[in-house]
Length: 160
Length: 117
Image (cartoon, rainbow over all chains, first blue to last red):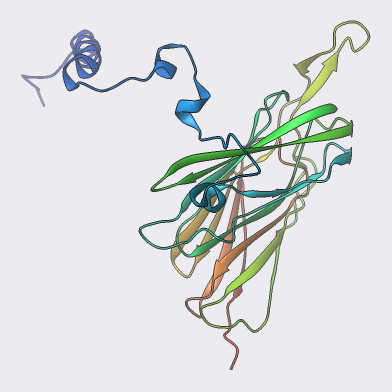
């Protein structure tokens, strides 16, 4: 069978390159500073400035993280994340929860995706590097964006 | 993998109140490891890839035929982990949990939800 209008590899690559360059130029997509190299966490996450005087929205969206203050074995650090107050309706629910630790060799521990059939509760065990480690938990709401909380723990024996 | 990995085990309440949340616990004896080792820990300790990594990449939770949760994990999840999560008891159907590791191997376990009478 002969294809008269068959596309060559060279043509395909050229078209893809041109289309890739044209999309951000003509579509008018707003690129925040973080997309241009300068990462501003305030644009991505919402941090409460005053932890003692939280607004109702912040109280609703901040995950409650249970992690022991001192972890003896860094290869089995128990972590429980729960959000009892947040609704899990079809139009307003928590989409995902992510656990991160930026001082560890493996930064992203896991991302847990939910649907309205879930209640927001996850318990697992993670590996943490030795020393003082800050564990970040990011909750993503389908309506209100991302909210992050952190907890600092002391790890006696690193588990990475 | 030298040793055969056992199937995961699931545990949840026998009688569940309809419409309420219930806790599901899944224990999986999987030898997860980051594969990292510290090189020259006296002067300048840095991590290096020592052995091939092994970890649970995905945990999929089905309630009936619906995929209700997906847990995507890295090698920084502990070995032999115990996962706990909550679901809303909306139907009397089995909860099935599927694990897939980074080599593509697959394990699954299930248990049926029964409402309290």
